[in-house]
Length: 163
Image (cartoon, rainbow, N blue to C red; front, side, top):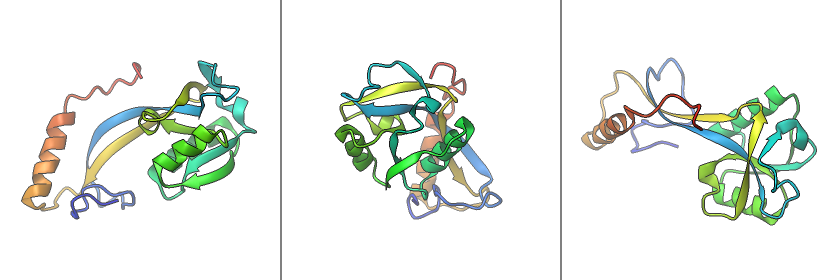
């Protein structure tokens, strides 16, 4: 994904080329199930408790999938991936159908009748950054966008204990 055709935001980047960054937000990731799923009544769950469940995950080419794969690795198992998609609405629809469960941020499920369950082990956070090359010359529109984002997020809380 590229924003403003200026490579301000990109999913794939060379770390050595992107040497300016701002943390835009930190999202808690939830185990998300259909409202009638047998686990829907739980407030917290260990990820290992759902190791045999079918999962729907974002495709491997998405940044969120890399984060989720590391979470499964930390939990010590590989998920039973029944579906993969690169569309949040399709992912939410599959969860809502009861066909699979997932690990997603709150923002993916805000318009669906899904149940979010806190994952106690391991901690599941997704950090979203805006990255750009230090010496990049941007168009006026892109520079305005970058200035807006930097100003908007300058006081964003870095303490994630409230999440």
